[in-house]
Image 1 (cartoon, helix red, strand yellow):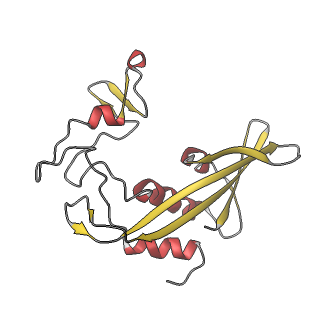
Image 2: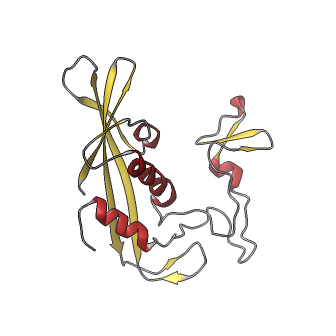
Length: 179
């Protein structure tokens, strides 16, 4: 994967440098079930990850700060690297949220899943269970969902959300590939 410098942002007395890696990889190892309950024989797996370095605003050496799925930090970029701007960053964030790990979806297309950050009957949907703070995990809230079409139960298999051709073209464009 190629690392792409998106830009930097300032917070308190530090500067943060944001780089991303975007990859689309074809996997042909078995039959897969899609979120629409179809069978396919290959998957184009989409992944995005970030590496964020920090240094004092007055100067100094860059040092590791964060890496992985730190999308909230990536969204803070305000000083863009050459080739990047606010519109391109907005597209990156949308594609990241919609398509990252498209081959490990726990819900099908027919389910109405409560997303992280939402509220269900006054209980916040979070990443982990924390009943004392009135927060239940995404999985805990959604695990009782059943597909009205097939009876598939939420989280009982990894389903594939087939990658849109436009996303593949966008990723190839970012990575400097033709097709």
